Amino acid sequence: MPNTLVTPLNSALQKIVSDAQLVASRLPGLPLQLWLIDPSSMQRQFSPQETQQLLDQPPYWCFCWASGLALAQWILQHPEHVAGKRVIDVGAGSGIVALAAKLAGASHAVACDLDPVALQACRANAELNQLQLSYSADLFSESVAYDLLFAADLLYDAANLTLLERFPDVAQKIFIADSRQRNFQHPLFMKKHILYGETLPDLAEPEEFRQVSLYQSI
Image (cartoon, rainbow, N blue to C red; front, side):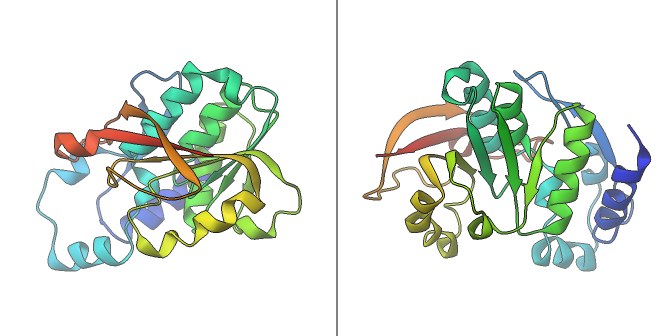
C-alpha cells in the first residue's frame, strides 16, 4: 500500500490525537480491511485540548462503526440485492458499506461524504482492498439515479432526518442501518431486520448499541 494515501490521513488524525496512527485492520465476518486508529492510541488519558478537538472534529472515518459493519456483513450475506446494481453509500465514513457492495458485485459503487478527509479514507481503504469505488461530496449533485442507496448511522442526528424525504429522488430503493434509533418511525420506511454489530476499535459500547436496526424503503 503506497504511503501517499495514508500519510495525509495520519497527519489529519495527529492534529487531533498527537500520537495516533492508522493500522490496516481486519474485520470480523468480512474479507475486507480498513485503515483504523491503532487501539493503543486510545489507552492513555487525553489532554483537555485533545478531548475538545475530538468533540469538535471527531475523526469518525478512522473507526468502523457497528451499523456500518453490520450493514456490510448483511450485504455480503445477501449479494443478490446489489449484484449488477448502481449503489451509493451516503455518509460513507471509512467506505465500508460501499466496499462491501462492490465486493458483492455492484456494477458501480459510490462513497459519498461531505467530509473531504473521509473521502480520502475511502480512497485509501479502496486501494487497501484492491477495489474500485467512485466518490462524491454532494449527494444531490448526482445526475444519474441509483438503484440502491445505503446509509449507516445517520439517524442519530436530527439534522439528517430531512434527508430521508429526498433519498427517493436519488435511488429506487433505500436501506438505512442504525444502532441508536431503536423504534424509528417514518412513513417512507419499515424495519426489516435486527442485525448485530460492534464498533472497531472497541469503544466498550453498551450491548444495546450493538443491536442494529435495518430499515428499508416502502
